[in-house]
Image (tube, rainbow, N blue to C red):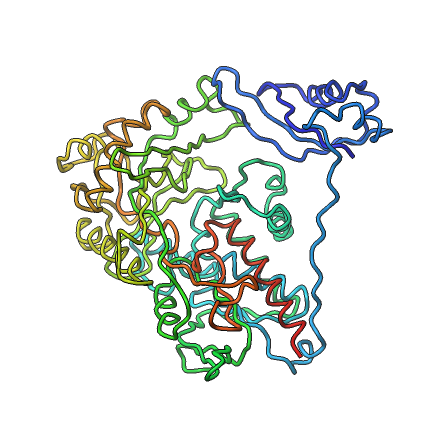
Length: 541
């Protein structure tokens, strides 16, 4: 087949327009086209009054070589690549019989689940340990806390439990980082196999949404167990055992005092597993501080964002709720940018520790809540929080404790009207703004909720963003604090074989280890680490 890129058509084009445009590009009559398969669809909204859908398609023709030769100077017309082959690293017999120690995966987020899925598919019978609860019970605990029906549970919340932090998010399946094409497609295909909508294979910016993601997570677990793997919930890893001299991993230790012998453990614990970072640091596992970002969540009425992005096409069913991506380089040298934008979503409580307030954004698949929300965050580096590998954790905790106090000490979040924030005056009310944060908000002054350099940069950025999104600086837009869990504050060092650089058998992986930033990249890293573990175990005597 031939792949044809960059077929741009009007938003409301008739179905016959796509094959006609493909035929025109290939300089063939429409009747000469065989099967046509959609590979990718995106939206070009650079001109609001003439929004286009942009397609990449695979099409069969009678003489592919002749067509490609004729169009050899058109770099948007190429031979359709062969399907990328998945690796095969079958487990030696000892794993099926139980004679060999099974690999352990710590953490049931996307990274851990994809590492375990690959190992199970290859016959290694992985054991996955998750400190939190299965996704159904975890959802009940988390929503119960948000709605004020249940107390905060440090082991079952928006950060901890089956599915990881991404379960209570927009379910985005794209990343700003250039990903491995083979692994990225592989993750999407496995998600579809686990119940995700097949459209994620086609859309340029696919998302699943929280409630649909819950079902996908359950299916991933069931597939792993059907293949001989095992998932144990409420099993909190609190220690590791290393061989004297070689530092080879020998076992993981649990909070209940039990010991699980293993010579290969994937540490896929997520960016909020601070006690695990402390545990590994205490055992001398190599790690270093890394940059992350801090800021606030901002909310606008979704129709304001739709009108700014789509113009008169706002509300079109093919466009849905509009998103945005914004960056401003402030005069004090700081970069301010939008983070984890959730169209038609909610701002939610995302703390994992008592006495602290953390915000995040969440959307359902429909993205039909009244507000758009996004993190507006400032990039910081270890120079801003000197003190060693765990200094970033201490920095985050300080800001989160301050937010808890500003919110009233009851898990309400501190909030402020945008106009008041820019004018450096406390908010007594939020005007027409209707904040969505659960458990609730307390109008206050956010001026000292972040370091002075971050406040200064955000105050400069908000009016600047209005030049790209008219109305972004609306006086009653609501800022809610604080957003601190943008990424892990540490990187657990690893080598080319993806093992810890100084602790053989330990495989740092995913967002918590500093090697991913979202569901897709975490899943990709999980597959890569799963391959590395399988290769090591298959070659061991």
